[in-house]
Structures are given as structure tokens and as C-alpha cells.
Amino acid sequence: MADIIQLLPDSIANQIAAGEVIQRPASVVKELLENAVDAGSTKVLLIIKDAGKTLIQVTDNGCGMSEIDARMSFERHATSKIRKAEDLFLIRTMGFRGEALASIAAVAQVEMKTRQKKNDLGLSIHIQDSKIQKQEPCQFAPGTSIAVKNLFYNVPARRNFLKSNPVELRHILDEFQRVALANADVHFIVNRDGEEIFHLPPGNLRQRIVGLLGTSSNKKLIPVEEDTDVIRIKGYVAKPEFSKKSRGDQYFFVNNRFIRSGYLHHAIMSAYDELLQRDTYPLYILFLEIDPARIDINVHPTKQEIKFEDERLVYNYLKVAVRHALGQHHAMPSLDFDQETSFNLPAMGRFQNSSSGNTTPAGNYNADKQSNSFERFPPQLDQRNQSNLENWEKMYEGLGNDPTAGSDQEEGKPLTLESSWSDESPTGTSEAGIQEQKAPVQIHRTYILNQIKSGFLLIDQQAAHERILYEQYLDILSAQSGVSQNQLFSKTIDLVPADADILRSILPEVNQLGFDIQDFGKNTFVVNGIPAELAGKKDELELIHHLMDQFKKGLEIKLDIQDNIARSMAKSAAVKRGQVLDVSEMRMLIDKLFACAIPYKSPSGRNCLHTFELNELAKLFDS
Ligand code: ADP
Ligand code: MG
Image 1 (cartoon, rainbow, N blue to C red):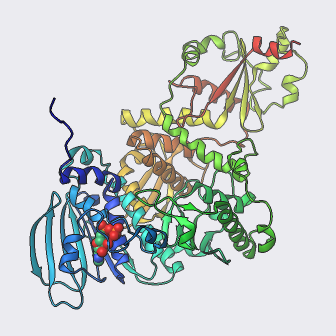
Image 2 (image 1 turned 90 degrees about the vertical axis):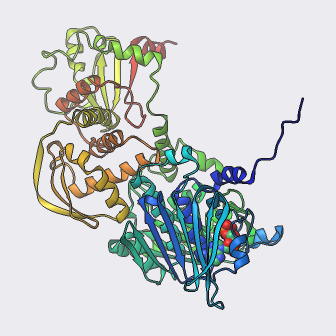
Image 3 (image 1 turned 180 degrees about the vertical axis):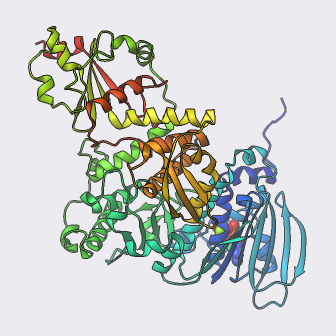
């Protein structure tokens, strides 16, 4: 039999390798911006068309390239930033693998212009399918401009896989934000489809944060600054009261490189400790400077993960630095830096501990992990649930669901535990006993306990209400029907550009649910009305911010738009744990829950209820 193993042609090998580095337009933006910064530029212009699908162009005033370097730069593993393996540990520049330009050239049409200061003329190069198509001298200011056109034009599967423009733009702006934060001394301009959406003159970090996140962020920032032999930490954290329900404004930079680290995030969360409300995340933008020999950044091709020689030490320094900063700003009693480092090194065990109280940082961390259960949606109903679903009406046979159930006095006033559990045993059969226990009872302002024929139900009020609203909103959205609305004195709301884009793209659906929001151009919206059922329950603007935060989470897990909106609205509008419900409200909730298509799970996959069967209960008490 003939030999069948062949080497892949270069162009295909490049395309395959490109998949690792270039996943979407935002990856191109990241690589080009980092190259521009690495080239020592003081001014960088980013131009985006069609969310980067048609054009991504970065123009800088950096060092430029010689003719040979310009041609070389598109070869795989061509880099000016590393010469030998040991250099890997001394890296200060952003790029070092020499993969980015080669990868980009494998999956897009690239036009580069570059000029070194010492030359009078620049060079223009056109590349397609990893091959130089054209090369000629050109007039050009010192620096480099790289235009990446029609990304993935030759990899249809990838191109089709790209998300909608708002989603891709969101990713692009995320990458831009990271580079812009890490280089506050560089002048950045972003032009999107002909409109200048960022103009950030060089400045200090605070000015850069404010330029990116809006003027309102200025008053939220608390400076962090700690210097030790091992590590230097500086940056800003936000005052606890400005923490948000969604993640997204958390940034770590290690030696000016953006990284993700659940472990270090936990250090910050534990520094805030009881200052944070449950399930909220503080804004932070922190720069760690550490001897490159003590870290390994070569663990992932996109270089967002990092290994520290002594992770626990970094954890603790970080925690203490943030505590210190919060303390100095009277957010909490200050702690002595040296003292704190000498004890309480976090054990991994604590990090993973899920049984601690809800308001502890560990609780927050787990709440965060819990949100991953989004990904399991739609939940596969297990066999038992499925048959429960069909039989739910039977559970109530002869009990509380009939109109005669519950005496008038019970109606409207919350029952206390004592009054409903005073005498009868669970199997009690006396008429009076059953009557008394029919009204649902709220427990810890969080759960609803309701007797059914075979035992009792325990319902999570928040999860249940989310399910009810979610199905209701989905109905409205798919039926294209309108809903009643409550008029307000108009209020305006300013969003950051990326959020504004998102809201603009979902405005028809949002308004269909009973909002009356108008786009006022730029990043301003006017809110004239909100859904009637939400009137007076929440601050309208807060509701919209919450809705946006939720929606963004949904984008990350690639939900369909209607589903995402219904889900975000449900999350924003549902009754929360801790809210007192009266008997009629509880009854309504139970009825509506069981009228749902899938009463057992909240839209984010949390259980809405558990059933406790009498025979199981009896077993608990058998000895
Ligand atoms: P890396 O950044 O990992 O070295 P890249 O593929 O991103 O790899 O770039 C290859 C080389 O091209 C760089 O090492 C650098 O010498 C050169 N280069 C890329 N972009 C620029 C730029 N904007 N200005 C000057 N040189 C550049
Ligand atoms: Mg690079």
C-alpha cells in the first residue's frame, strides 16, 4: 500500500494554527493593538467596519518595519521580541510568539503600510492566502498601518459562526478597553462605521478609566497602592456601594498584560468581604508588577492565563492591598499590612468550600459558579419531574386549590409558622387540621411551604417567579402582542457605548414588553414608560441597568435574542429572596407556577421547588 501521510500545505497549516489565535474579529483587534503598543507608539487609531467583519484597521506612529522585516512579519514564528528560550522568562512586551500576523494573513486579506523614520518612503504590501500579492513603495507617515479585510473570507464555517454585530462589537470593545487601560499614556482613537466612539488622549490611569467608563466612574474609585519586595500593586477598586450584579468590570494586569484569574478574583472578593451585597461584584482595575522570572505567561496561546511561582503569596498581598485601600477610605476598619500577611494564607480548601454562609466571599464565589448552570439550559427534565408535571393537578386534589379553600381571615395576612404548625402531626386527619394548613406559609422570606395531598411542597419564591415571568415574557415576544404600560415623567439614561449598542439592538423587543424607551442618539435613551406590573416596584433606571447586565450575561452564553430578553427581564423583575409575600400573593405564585410549561426549573436552571412525600417524612421519624 502506498504511503498516505503527507505534510499539510503551508496555507492550510496556517489556517489551522490561526484557529487558535484568531477566533473572532476581537482577536485581530487585540493582536494589532498590542503590536502597535509594542512598537512604541504614542498614538493609535482603530477603525472598525461592520463589527470587524469587513474591516479592522490599526494605524500607529511606532517604530515601523524595514522592508525585510515587513515581509518576514507574516511568517509563522517570526518575532523580533524573543531570541532564545530563556528570553521567555524575561518578556515585557505583549506579543512574543510571532504567530499573530501569520495567523491573520491565513484567514483574511491584509494590507500593510509601514515606514521607519529614517526612510523617506514607506512600503505597501498586500497579502492574501498567506502570500504576498503585491509590494510597492508608498508615501506614508512613520509608523505602521495594518488593514484586515473580510476576516474568514476563506473559512466559511468560521465566518458563519460569527455572532451578530452587537455581540462581536462587544468583544472588540472589551479587548480595546483592556489595551487602553494598560496603556493610559497612549492616545487612542476608535472609529466605528464612520463615527468616532472613543477619543482618549494620553493621561494617567484615573483619566483613562473615566474616559472609558464614563465620568460617573470618577467618584467611585479608590486608589490601591502597595509595594513589597516581591510585588507591586497599584490601580483602583470601586467603593463597595457601586458593585454590580454582573461581572465585566474586573481587570487584572500582570506586568501590564491582561489576565483572568478566578483565584485572584477571589482574593479581591474576600477583601471586600461583608461590604458587598450578595451576588454583586465590585469594579476593580489592578496592576501587578512582578519579576517576570516568577511567572509563566506561556501557558495559553491567547496569553490570558498565567502561572505564578507562589500563587498564595500573590493572593494574600492582593487581598491585603485592597483591604488597606478600602480601610483608608473608611469603607472598613484598616488592617495592618505586615500583620495581615503573616497569617491566614488561604488554603485551597477554603476556596472550594461551598457550605459557608451566603454572604461570605466563598458564597459569592459559588454564586458565580452557579451561574454557569445557565449553560445546562434547557434542563433535561428527569423522569420523575416529567410525570410530576403531568400529575401536578392531582397533587392538589381536595386541597388548597379549590375556590372554597382558606377562610377569609387567612386571606391577606401572612401566617406565622406557629399558627400553621401548632398542633397537628403531618399525617393529621382532622378537618380543622387540614383547613389550617392549607394556606401557604412563607419561611425566612425566601421559601413558600405548601401542603399537598401526598405531603408538602417547598418553593423557592425567586426561582419560581423568574420561571413565571420568563414564560409570560416569551409568550408576549413570540405573539407580538402588546402589554399595558405605565407612563412616567420621562427620564434619560446614559449608557457606555457598547451597552448603548446592545440596548439599541433590542429596543423593539424591550418596548414590546411594556417599556417605552426612545433612542436619543449617541449613548442616551429616554424612558417614557415601563411595564405596568413593574410600576413603583423598582427604580426604572436601575431596572434597565439590571436588564442590560443580565442580557450581557446571556450574550456570553450565546442565547437567542428573545430568550435572552425574556430571561433577563424575568431576572430583573422577579420578587427577590427576602421579600415578604402575603397569602394571596403566595397562592397566585403557586397557581401561576403550575400553569407554566416547565414549573420545575427557573430559566437559569435553578430548582423552583422540591416535593416532600409523607412516606419519606414518616421514614425520617421511624427508628
Ligand atoms: P509577535 O508580536 O508575537 O512578535 P506578531 O505576529 O504579532 O508576533 O508580529 C510579528 C512581528 O512583526 C513583531 O515581532 C514585530 O517585529 C513586527 N510588527 C508587527 N506589528 C508591528 C507594528 N505595528 N509596528 C512595528 N512592528 C510590528
Ligand atoms: Mg504581536
